[in-house]
Image (cartoon, rainbow, N blue to C red; front, top):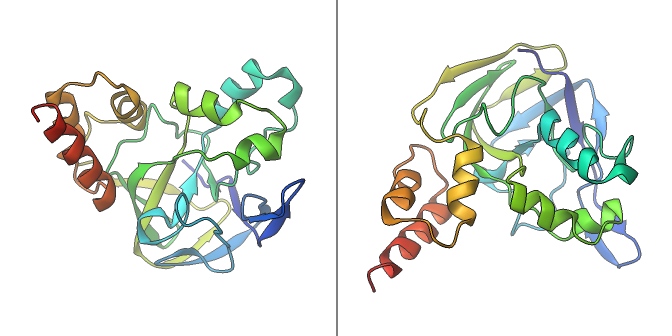
Length: 214
């Protein structure tokens, strides 16, 4: 696997609202990565993006295809880099990436920490009233990384899977259990026990599991 795209952006006003967003990224050939992500890349809404457990975001090409199949008007619009992600690697998707996976991109070592939670700004950017809900419902959210070793990534660098501690829990299955209101205690436990899961999300799932027997 090779890194095919890298993206970063500044805060811009999202029209017609007056709110700022960091979703608008532009392609770059090389980036420096520290513990908070790509140096020079801005994340505005820290509820959904940014911080050590959400340092880098990746979105999959198969998920873009799902979007354009459902929204014909977005053909040529919903393309790599347009949903606010930082990296494109063709062979990786919600079906092939597992929670806790460690990858080396260039000299940077990262770990998959959680799926993305899509926010309303996706609707505004693409001028579709229900696109955010479609992405969440279909589980085509993309995923976040924490940075274990800082360094540089260049387009064309190899993308190597280093470790897979949770081979039974890919992002696709994680989203399915997370979003199902009738998930069982054992299903929730399978997520809670994942090595590398973001702390706040583990606590949220533990509370939900406890409520099943409250």
